[in-house]
Image 1 (cartoon, one colour):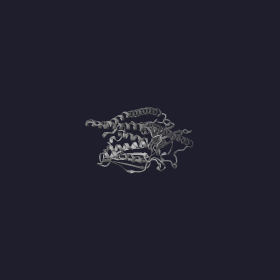
Image 2 (cartoon, rainbow, N blue to C red):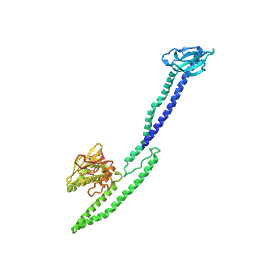
Image 3 (spheres, rainbow, N blue to C red):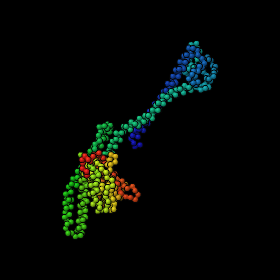
Image 4 (cartoon, rainbow, N blue to C red):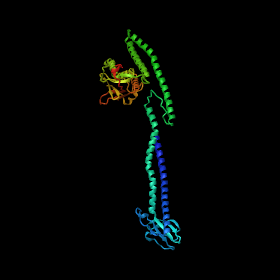
Amino acid sequence: MKSLRTRLFCGLVALLIASCVGAGIWAFGWSFDEAIELQDAILLQIGALALRNHVEGELPAQAGVDAEARIIIRDIPSKAVRTEGDIGLNVPFDLKDGLHTLEGREGSWRVLVRARSDGSRVAIAQPTAARDEFARDSAIRAVLPMLVLIPCFMLVIGGVIHFSFRPIVDLARRLDTEQISRPHHIPADAAPKELKPFIGSINRLLGRLAVMLDHQRRFVALAAHELRTPVTAINIHAENIDHSQLPQDAANRLVALKAGVRRTVRLLEQLLALSKYDYGRAESPLPVKLDGIVRTVVADFMAAAYTHSIDVGCDRVEVAFVEGDGTALTIMVRNLVDNAIRYSPEGGHVTLSVYRHDTHVVLLIEDTGPGVATEDVDVVFEPFNRGSSPKGDGTGLGLSIARRIVDNHRGSISLQNAASPGVTGLRVTVLLPATSYDFRHGGNSDT
C-alpha cells in the first residue's frame, strides 16, 4: 500500500471499527445487565406487594403486555409437595429467600422467594425468555446507533483526509504548471505548518536552479555575442575570396566554407534569440496584429519557397489582435514557417491560417513534410534536439525558441501529424489569448 492517504484512511477506519466493536460489546453487555437488574427490581417490588396483600395466582392480563411476560405468584408449601401447576414449575419447599433461576416445563423461570410475617412463604415467577428478549432488545437499541454511525464516521474521516491533503495536491499541481525556464518561489504563508519545511526546501532548490539557469543564459548570450565578430569577419573574407579567380577544387571548398559560415551565423542568431526570449514576458505588452505578421512573414519566404518549388500561402486569415512583443511573435512565426519549408519536399505546400476562436487567436501552420515521430513530439521542443530523423542543416533551436515565445505570451503550442491514410504532413497549432483591441483606435497594422 504505497498511498499515504490510503494507509491513513485504512488505519483510522480500522481503529474506528475496532473501537466501535469494543465499545459495542461493552455497551451490549452493560445494557443487557441493566435490563435484567431492572426486571429483578420489578420482581422485588411485586413481591413486596404480594407479601403485604397476600396476592396469589397469575396476575390479570393487561392490554399491551405479552403473554410471555406474565408473572405468577404461588405459595410455597411447608413440606415437600410437588406443585407444578399449569406452568410446570416446581418450587422446592426448602428454597432460600431471594432471586433464583429454575427450570420448568415451559422453560426457565426467574423466581423470587419471600417469607411472610406469619411464616408462610411465597414465590413470584416470570419466564426468563421474555426477560432476556427485553434485555437483548434494549442492548441492541443501545448499540444500533453506533453501528449506523460507523459509515458516517468513515465518510467524515475520508473527507477530513481529503481536505487535509489538499494543500499537498495543490502544491503538486502548482509545481506541475511551473515552467522550468522561469522557476518562482512557492508562497508558504497559507500552507500548513507541517508543509512549511518541505516548501522551504523546494524554494531553496528552485533558487539554486534559477541561479544555474541564469548563469547558463548569460554564458550562451555572451558566447554567441562574442563569436559573432570573428564569424562575420570570416564571412566577409569568404565573400571577398569568392570574387577571385580560383581553381575548381578551391572554388568547391569555398562553397562548403560559405555554407558552414551561414550555418554558424544562423546558429549564433538563434542562440541570441533563445537567450533573449528564454525568460519572462514582455515588460510592456502592446496590441499586436497577428494576421499582419503572418502576411509579412509569408511574403518574406516567397522567394526561398519558390527556389524549392514549395507553395506557401494563406488559407484563412482574419483580423486578430494579441497582446505582447511584436518582434518576438514575428520570430516565432518565422521559425515555424522556416521549419515547415525546410522539411517539405519539392512540390509540397505550406498553408497558414489565423482566426479567432472564443477567447483565443489560433495560428495554424500545415505542411506536407514527413511529420514528427510520436516519441519526438515533446522532445523536439528542447534546445538542440532535432528528433530521431533530423534533416537539412537546422540548429534544433527553432521550435524551442517558438515555444519559449508562446509561453511568454501565456499561450500554447502543439504538434499533430496528418491523420489521413497515405498522407504525410505536420500541423502546428498555436493558441494565444485574444485581446479586444480595436485597430481603428491606433496601432501598427504589421506588428
